[in-house]
Image (cartoon, rainbow, N blue to C red; front, side, top):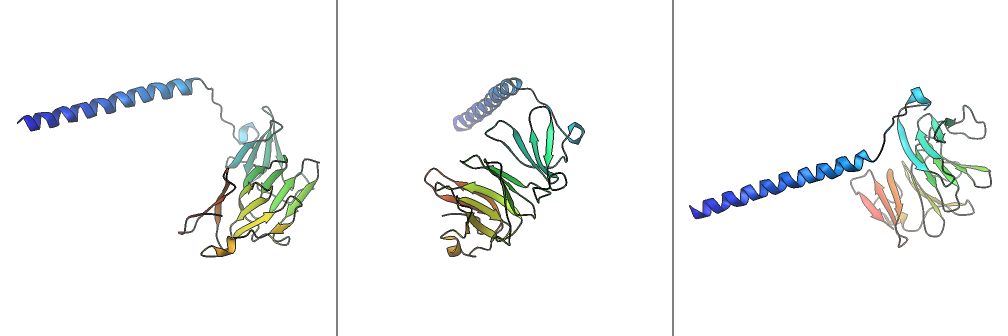
Length: 207
C-alpha cells in the first residue's frame, strides 16, 4: 500500500512539473514574440513569386531573396528582381541558393542555370557544366578557410578557387559513390572541415 502511495506521489509531482514547465515556457515564448512585430510580403507587395528558396542579408545591408522567378533585392521599401528577363548581363531565371563570400562577392546558384557571381568590383562571372561544374542545378554553396568556394549540385561537388578556376576537391572521389551525390547542404566549420549533406541514404560526410 505504501509503495502504491509513493508511486502516486511521484506521478503527481511529475505531472505538476510538466505543467509548470510548460506554463513558464509559454510565458517566456509569448514575451519573446511580443518584442517583435511581424509583416508578410507576397506578390501583392512586389515579390515576383511566393516561393522563397533562400534569404540572406548582404554586407551592404540589403536583403537578398531567392525565388524561382529570380534574385530579389529588398531595401526595406522596394523589391528589385534580377533575372535574365530584365537584365541582359545575367543568364539565370531562378535563384535557388545565395551566398556571400569573405571578399563580399555575391554567389547565386540557379535551379538549372549554373552559378552567377556578382563581384565586388562590379563585374559578373558565370559558371556552368561547360565551365566544369558537375551539374547546372545548384543546391548549396560555402567557402573554405582558403577562400575556395564549394559548389554543391544535384550531381556532385566542385570548387572554384579565388582565381575562379574550377577543380574537384581532394577526398571527394574517395566517398562511397565518388562524386555522384545530390548535395543538399555544405558547411565549413571552424577547423576547416567541410560538412556535406546529401539526399542519399549514405547521409552526411566531412572532408
